[in-house]
Image (cartoon, rainbow, N blue to C red; front, top):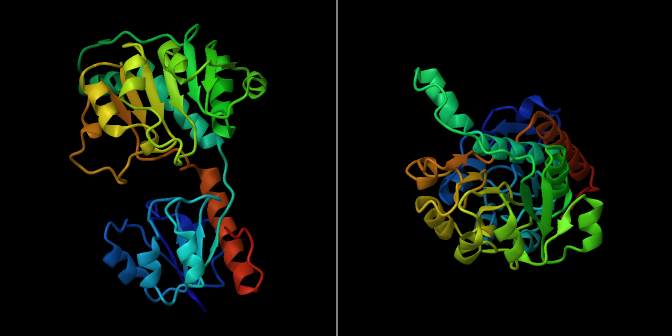
Length: 313
């Protein structure tokens, strides 16, 4: 039987969510920050299952894993895998499907948590502190600005409408027809969306055109009472500019689920700024998503062993 390592299984649930009986599967719960440690841990494995983009697979890693034959990533897109290098080393790369509703739900958890100051109020209550120390921001009648209106953005828009918000949307290729289909108004441009929104939520894919899409200039256009939420990819927002805006109180706060380095270093300022509500990349971490990821990962492995790979990237 071929050996299979499941990487970054933080919660230790992967092996219980699918039937791995066709391989000798091992769950590795600790994240490898060192390439040397990663190579040492999976050097003897012919199959590796990667969780999203937690562990990069550049050309150097493929060079050092001569036994690797199949790499399965959860999701059908993974910018951390060098697909060209995989092909050059004869490694088949397959993906799995996954849902978008869990990220929509977490986006709204962040928005509501920020608007109603849930963390400081809950912390004060537990500690026996002051009773009611903040005044929450109303969402009804306010403007929700969405950068991106794909599956996740459209889902966030639907909840915004249910809260009675005016939904404004913009992205580089967004059409008026698509915006109206999702119950949103098409913003004239990015600047208008940034300046006119009470909550700005990011839902575009990271790429050459979207890296640094929200920088110091765009953050400077936002209302001082507005919130920025990012459950997409950290690099879409200039991180240094965001830290400046938060330190200076240029915006009211930020809800962040994604970071340029994950896990977020212990001393990072995003862990301590009082106007940041941060979560450890939980957007896709849900029961339904995990069940889909690992069951389809096992399907990918079975198809590969049978000589007919599926969901090849």
